[in-house]
Amino acid sequence: MASLVEKVTRAAFRVIAAQSPEKAGELAFWLFCRTRSVKPQSEKERLALEKASARMAASETVRLVIPGSVVATHVFRPAPENDSGERVLLVHGYRSRSDHMLAMADALVARGHTAVCLDLPGHGASTGRVLHLGKAVEAIDAAWRQHGPFGTFVGHSFGGPSVMAAAAGAILHVRRRMPDRIVTIAAPSDIADVFHWLGNLLGLGPAAQSAFERQVLRVTGRPLSEFRADRMFHGVRLPMLVIHAEDDKEVAFSNAEALAGLGSHVRLMRANGSGHRRIVSAPEVTAAVAEFAGGETDCRRIVDLPRPDLDESHKLPSSERGRPRRLA
Image (cartoon, rainbow, N blue to C red):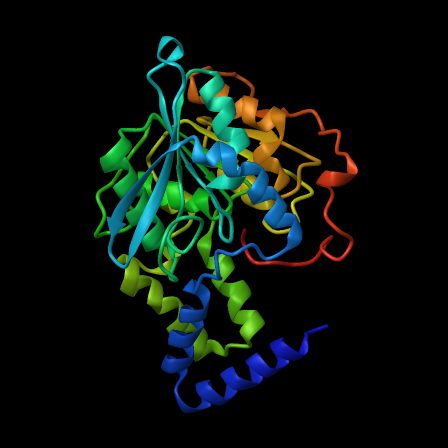
């Protein structure tokens, strides 16, 4: 059942669209790109950030300027005698931050790799209040110029299509940055699905929805229809590791199946029991990513990771279970 806020918002968009579908589409895109405050939104998040603070403070933080924002990168290095020479870029999801990727960074460093965590615009230690795929790729490009080249891109949730778009050169005004391999974790395969979801939530009619989707062409140079994995990577056989849980309540597992369908160069790992957010810190997942980043190969196309043994502290509160949310 729709909340009062949703009902009022839908009514407001109906009024605006009746006067100007174009304005309704522009406003929908503004809402879509607007980031929330970086302050913790719950006591659980506050405690998690407090726990991560010492480890984050031990990293080398480098701030990089992109149009409209200063983005923060956090570099975690192995001991010189253990350095493999591999550099890995980690990109978090929407409404997340590098602090939540620490387990992944630690697993990579333990294997001798340098891990660079990127805070996307409007997230973590980065400035700005606007994030869309174009801005994400601008930030990835800045990280590449400062810390790259990278052997591996790792993207969680929204970070998945972000690293894929960067590797494919999908944003026309940003130089293509292709690593040796890509890892996506709980990532959508088609950005259009997200636009359709928000359009339905706002009650946009066909004209306003079209205006909403045309904003993608304005900020990226390509239409929304081009931002699906099979089109971005048409003819490109870049080794990929796709990790997803069938119990993911935010990004359907069918997205992982679509990515796996790109070809035999893609390996699918089912991380069932890890959901959408816990998956980035699950030991089985972080170990698999660290091995893949080191160039280790596995001839199996589909792999089932062991289910995690979750204690009560890792379970979502009852109010959050099964609740539909935007990409994280």
